[in-house]
Image (tube, rainbow, N blue to C red; front, side):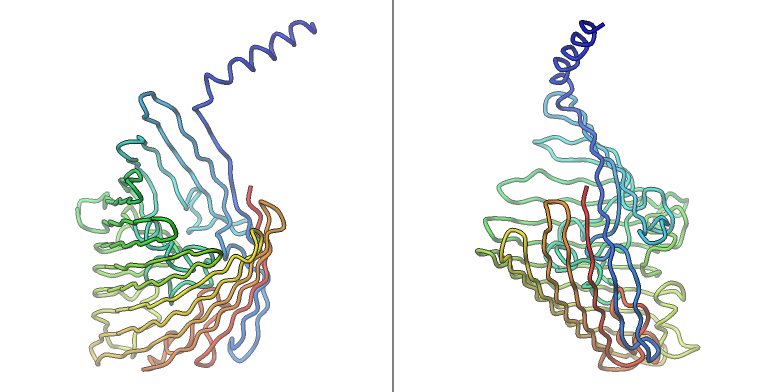
Length: 382
């Protein structure tokens, strides 16, 4: 009996190299913390919230070596709320990502399914929220999707290999309906990295987003604009020297003929009027200093100017946002962080949600023109 066991163990050990290039990895993030929000109907709110620095998730990803440098790849990723156990992304089982494709070291990767667009893949990493800070530091309403408020369904994506520091890619998302252009999406982007320098730019166009249940952008609860057309473009740069990283980013969002659903229903300037367009210009400067391998402090400032073009005229609210964060790694997989965000709304008042400060992640709309959110949290990665 003992001989049989020894033979079985040796056989299994010898068989490992034959499968060394075929991998499946289980991974995840659990992010949970206590938030404080002021000016909520004149009161203060304390609450437990999940998924700020990173959305809480678990997933599977893998690759199979097909020979000649070609691999089959896949990834499925689920988002969830730690406090309630509910699925994220409108209750989708794998709402964060779900795709399969082919990858080649020389020619790049072609993948199919629910995926991230080029704004998220390339541009977001030059912003604080898309890099090290997360949800609380996103631009008002995450109007440029750099915090990944929506994913794109029915998507064919191409990502190039690294060519002397330059990479590029793009997505096309099918409408999956008889109206070929009804709720379809396209995006392109690229980046150049050399030493401590990173330069990135991206563009996204969506026709009739969220107009059909089976289309490119329809997340059943994810936050996005509903309109006849959504266009977003931007560019950013990061530079790292020693322990310091500084970044600049600019994004521009144009929402044509917004409907009365989603965000737009809350920001119609005057009851009974119609909006012909919404425009947002976001100017961000951010910085991070890595004091030790286990500890960093980061800061962000964003100025957002918006235009609401309506049948009764044009309004120009503006928003100034400041964020601070400190993060300490207790181990390679567990860290503790504190964050604070302040936002002040100025310029024209709309008399609605955006007439007051709205900090992404706040418990509710501010009862004054300013609002503060503070957070202390623990994050575990596996």
